[in-house]
Length: 446
Image (cartoon, rainbow, N blue to C red; front, top):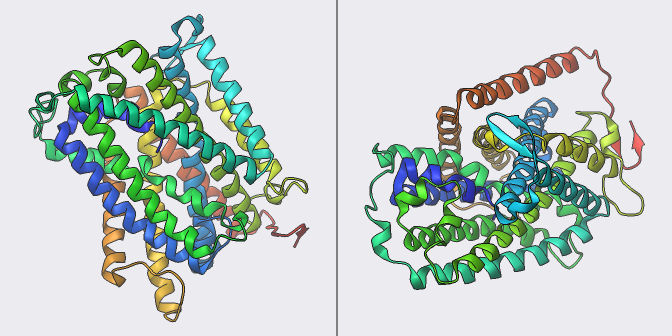
């Protein structure tokens, strides 16, 4: 449950209208719930840190694992940029006096001193939390989640109490006058990014409490997707009932604009923005943790330098991985909000491609090990094939989504192409054994 819906809701309403937005999220949630069940089945078979990289490597080999790791690396690193930029944006709205002077322009958007400073400070705090290990991370996540949910549901209650169903009309039209069915595809294509946080559960499965079984952990994957879909549907329904949805579609942050007509709107907006900042920090922390564990898994499998598999003896955390991710996050924060939509497209494409490989790996393991006694996704082979088809559709729709500006579109395609070329070059180099491969097991390099 992150903050991407706050930024993306205006575009969703513009292209899909109220009905199309909610239908697209519901369909995307159903598809990703099936994918999450496939993840859970693989995690039951391979309960090790590393998630997708570990599973695909075990099933298809190290080369396929490298492809997945490369895709997910750009996903999580891009998401860190998204969270940092979004934090600056929310802070500038909540405390205009803190934004300071404009330092420079990036992709048509101003970068201001105050928001940039706060985002960099938050990045440092999150890096320190992750360096201290998983226990500090879990405590932080629990506190942030409870605060976020409490504030949001109070706000939603006010929107339902003082809103009107008339604000939802016309329910079956798009804001731009186009087909709302086309808009459904737009929302569906963004679902991998806004609903993909369930993987974080599996990236720390080795660090679970002794009293928590692996079967409990893997079932949480599907439960997390279901809860997130219900959450998004509720908050969107509340927003479009609180204010005319066409006005919201034209605003920068529709969920915030929806509060303007409520009693005590100034105070409610402030509280809601604080909740969004809490949610953003919570999601940022989760993404940071996952990015570090991803580097750890790739390093342990000999895909990238062994240094990222080094574990701090005191905290149990991959300390050098934390430092590397923090450096990248620091650099990325200097980009502006003009890159938010193309970053979402890039992340959705790469996540959905990973979904396809995970579902395929699950079906292969069912054939190799039909006697597996752990968690099994419902629906058998037909459900797995349907999940592959749905994930492939997400890849297509995310690719064809237009960017807000020509510069942003060029960045989107440039990043995808450059990342693919760099990955291909590394793959060829490794196959020719120009670069020696090291694998770290425990504290030894072999």
